[in-house]
Length: 262
Image 1 (cartoon, rainbow, N blue to C red):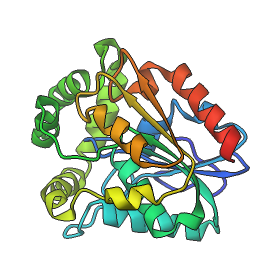
Image 2: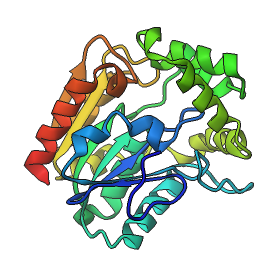
Image 3: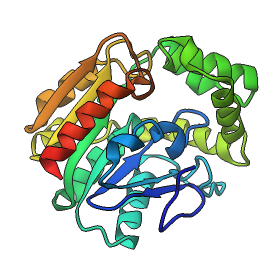
Image 4: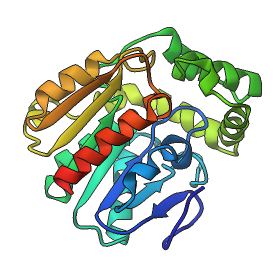
């Protein structure tokens, strides 16, 4: 994992300049490093901070904790407070995008900009989502999950990636935390309302893969229409992992966006 001046287990903290908070998604075995390693070169000239959300990676995973977006919003603001960050840009992937949007509705004055990757607005059901929910820690199951649900091109999935993500999915408490989140999501609701989103006058970059099997790209189209200052990019030929499969294109979008809002 890439770490820096405030490094600890499960935390990316590299670079100097305007703070960019990286919030990963909630697939089995994911971590901040797994989600955002390909993005870090695009963040040169900025301070990139990416925690493992509680329940994932090297974070703590106590039993009985209510895992879900509210917990992670609290974690994100606590981290920003600990680092004395009054203003920051947030890059949120999948569930991380929901956390970013919720942060913006709570304390909009602190959010200078948002990059929202594969953001979900509406519940949906698909074979990919069923596989994610049904996953139990197993190397072969992880390989099938990554190649079937996330990668448009199965060659994107390396053996090291499979091993690393299986290890993190099988860490003590990790599977229980993930299942706790899945069980609690219906009660947590869909996140910020359309009215709240229309009130977010924050520069935003909304990006999705056209072939996304996990979060249909139509969510991104609707989200961008609601956010008053949003740019929308739908990347063809890729799905939920566009940051891995179209790294250069996504990096160019990020650099352009940051150059305008930082």
